[in-house]
Length: 365
Image (cartoon, rainbow, N blue to C red; front, side, top):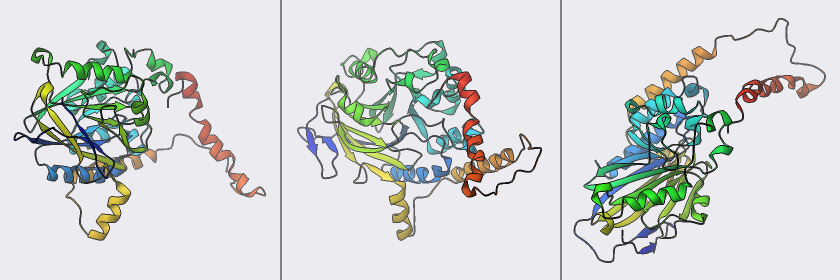
């Protein structure tokens, strides 16, 4: 892929073809990361994805940089994140990097339930050895969008062992660093050999810090055109690979969506790719759009199923949460001479409640 680099006022670096070409096609990518089952923001995410779809009808794809599920609020967690997986189906999200929280319940749960093909999501991690337990995990997923072969290549953080319990990590083998694994796959897809797969565009989905990716000693090579990061829950823009590809991290909990246009001409190793922000900024943030929409008095149409999922999940959570699990034999007096200290035992009781499980299975962040 041939790139020349230009810096826009928004801070996004784009690659420009040396000369104008007639076969330029536009592909739009909309990315979230670290959603963590926050289905209460699902309708807003859907509104932004619908905005992207209207911007480039039929040529827009929704992706995630990992931790779609796991570490979730009660309405999703009580059903093992089934509402979140259903929400992803409403969004049309079909590609995601595997994050560490996808493994919260173990490798088998990830492979057989979360990554089950009927959920419609291709889960990616090129730096994880694909044993039989990871039969539904892939290095990359190729999509043809607007006549363009777009390869999404995924990886999970190199520091996986520090954020997974030992009981889960024993079933996971990292075969290389995230950056080197992405390079390995991207180079193969850009070597001019159609027999091993060729891409016109390579988008990396890496569940790791945008800054760590940008500063990696090896560095992502010139065959990667766009990078979506995750894991830190921060909004990060203005980072780039050594060849100038943007590295964008879209916050967490469905509070931000990154939407980029890729203008593509040519094909395979001879393709030219230009990356630009679809709506003038790298990230659409929920706080900003809520204010803007309120003043404008209108918003993109939202699929009614998104709201239905939230309402059904909340109803289930309320019913399940109202079931008593224990009783205190004597009245508990919350008042006393100590004032606020009279409440001291209650938060301590709540804080200590997970300790037996943590001691049994090891810490997981």
